[in-house]
Length: 560
DNA sequence: AAAATCGCCAACCGCAGATAG
DNA sequence: TCTATCTGCGGTTGGCGATTT
Image (cartoon, rainbow, N blue to C red; front, side, top):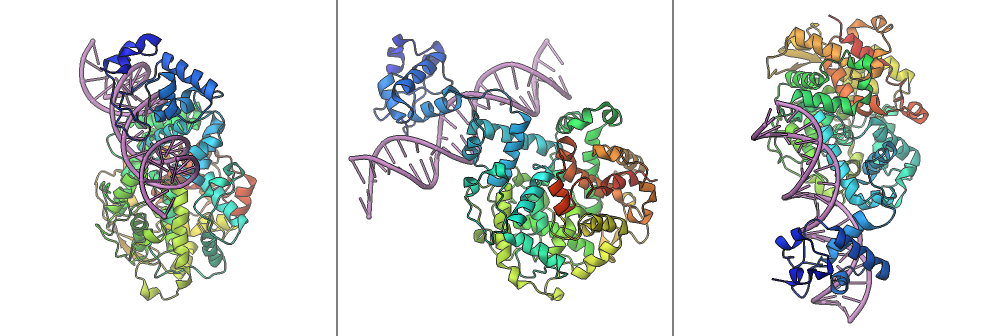
């Protein structure tokens, strides 16, 4: 048959090897002589040969291994085996928490640059990191959790702001030490922020519909909006995963009250869908982050009555890095009538733009295989190209919320507004008044109707917004259940139970949805390992104090 | 107890850049 | 300058054990 079996006298080839030798397709690394090269798992004998060869000849010239060692493996396979398993100083076993944190940070900065990431993790291979990340993606997506902890995004934004190097750096960020948190964020993001501070709200009628919300949805992971989550996962499993992802929930005090944490997500989904009248059909083809953003914007448009012309089947633009986003985007993108949670809306409102009018992606194409935040930055750069087009002409963009409306909306929620002012307003992590987020996320119904009442029309920012409940399964019982559980989505919500009643009841009539959204947005690693840093608090008002109100929000949700 | 599902891991594949001839 | 080869990287697949239904 081949040398594969004939030369087994050296002990290299085990029985399983000779039984089904695979023919190397002859691509790079294949045997030029056409000998049958083995594929599949390596045996210890093969490992020994390879190790011995490398000891003698050093790394490299992998194709010569087959020629000189009698090892019938292609060069690529040898290199891979050596790099991933045989080379010295390899660290085996599960990633430590520190390593995981580093990976998260690195990925936030680099994207899917596994090799670069591996360079920052001694003893770890790119393959390991890649596998870990892919598993993490699956797990968190299934659990409806954001991919990145908030502090990662906030840190990225914060440090980018402080960096202020005045230029968008090239896509190759890997040369910087991510461990130093030198994230490369285009200044455009912060130009917008500064504009907000100056009272000149960015209004970008001609900008592609890339918004901070979409950026956040990407950066934080759209998965916090579990609406796209495939409903196939058993609730118990989701509960398990949720708990595993929220170590804090293992605490008895929390766990005892968490009779069905996964229900939170379901409820969140229900509420969101209910509130926005969508089932968020899954559409894996919709990869357009811009459309994604447009849809997000569409929500804010719903809120303020200026509906966007984002529509189903809009241009499909590829994500620079699809990864886990694809289905997520699709879930949103497939429903023009649907809207994501309010949380993001006011972000959009500040960097709102018309729906994509062209192939913006081509203008801001991220480097190949870039990661989420990476792609995010490129989008932002594209945004920057149109930044100068800011205009106050509201009429030119029916899809844009006006600054005035935002201010107005902010005033509707004095509680949140005040808190944010106390902690750094108007600089918010999202580049604008955080209170506007709260206000937007906190539908103030003039009629006082609650979301669970399926109001045919809700008043957002003084405008009537049609709400199209999809699943008439929302019940007061479920709402109560959800509200209670919502308190557990952020462990710290349990800590503060005294002052929330003092808060304006008018601020929170419909808190549940928002709290869920925020919980999903922050709850993940917040409850896990989010240790607000001083810098976080100081710059963003996003530290523990900055979110002081969140527990209130949750607790308020328990109001009858 | 069996089937289904999932997570983890290892390995392969294809592409692209670098380098040598 | 062109071509072939090597090397590295990222995406994907498949196997296997564990867990769940």
